[in-house]
Amino acid sequence: MDTNKTGLWRVISQGSLVKQILVGLIAGILLAWLWPSAAKNVGLLGDLFVSALKAVAPVLVWVLVMASIANHRQGQKTSIRPILVLYILGTFFAAVVAVIGSFMFPSNLILAMGDTQLTPPGNIAEVLKGLLINIFANPVDALIKGNYIGILAWAIGLGIALRHANESTKTMIHDFSLSVTQLVRVVIRLAPLGIFGLVSSTIATTGFETLKGYFHVLAVLLGCMIIVALVVNPLIVYWKIRRNPYPLVFACLRESGVTAFFTRSSAANIPVNMGMCRRMNLHEDTYSVSIPLGATINMGGAAVTITVLTLAAVHTLGIPVDIPTALLLSVVAAVCACGASGVAGGSLLLIPLACNMFGISNEVAMLVVAVGVMIGVLQDSAETALNSSTDVLFTAAVCLSEDDRLAQDDAELSQTQD
Image 1: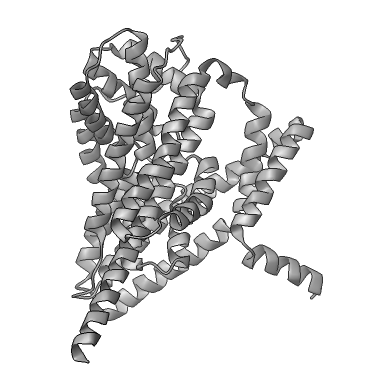
Image 2: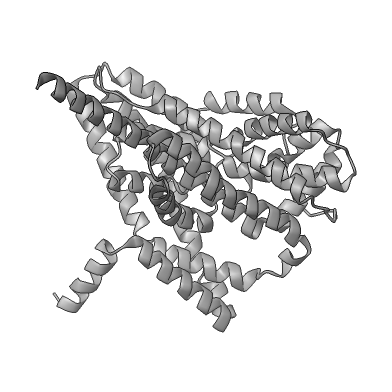
């Protein structure tokens, strides 16, 4: 075999994935700038990559969660509960940041009827009803449609039932999970090509012309997300691990956030987050459940989007808002965000829910949704990057905290014995 080809394959298969993605990113920008017509055509690479991620993610979640629970040993510790606490805190504080940002820099929207066929839920009860329906969905239908609530429910149920199975059955399930994981790793290695296609086609097709008229509200959205990513989340992580959180924060943004920014789907980014957790040697029993769960309910970026666009509509219509109402909006936005789907644009469907608090009609609220669609080129990408990178961040924070606590206990026990 040609040694040059062997060396090239080794670089592709074992080289730094982050560096390769950055190369794909720069190449995509250059192609869109120098040869726009060709850039639109290579968008097929991006579509194929996202399709591959979305195809493999439901199976990955199903198998890993089921295998993790089925092979769980009595007395073996997981840390799902503290991760859930961080998910809830992070989403609520993201909404609070969005409220503060909206009061400091109020936005006026130019509400023009957009061509959208989105059908929002009418109230929070409908969101909860939808969640319950998704939980009890047919498992095959859940896998086909990417219904992660249903997939999680069935995976957890089957995993608990299989804990009483024979060891040979458990071994087979574990081997199956390893095989699916290996297949996912192959898909992830194609990320540089996928990012190249996504970036080049997006810039060549859309550019930034559509964003000029809505720059202010977009700036508020992105500013709030940056504050959440670089201030709020690090403070939460520091509270958990009691040391400098920024190396972990930047690692999560670099490895998870960059990919999520371009796929614009928390669900599609699940395999990427799983791979990062594995490389960080986190507890598989924990992250195999917390990562897909986070892609479903950990939606800090969605809370920012819902809050900022709702308050922009409120300010545009001249509706007065006091502090208690703003805090209530934060709670509602956090709850709504947990009901947002893990796909591109999912949070926009829930803006009418928050608008309903202020008596804003559904027709006007849908105009606000149309604005969200117009600025979605950057808004949804940044939102997904924040959501998905935070899944890994909070999972890693809890796992590291548990490791530190166990190490401290061992040290104290050792001193006692001495």
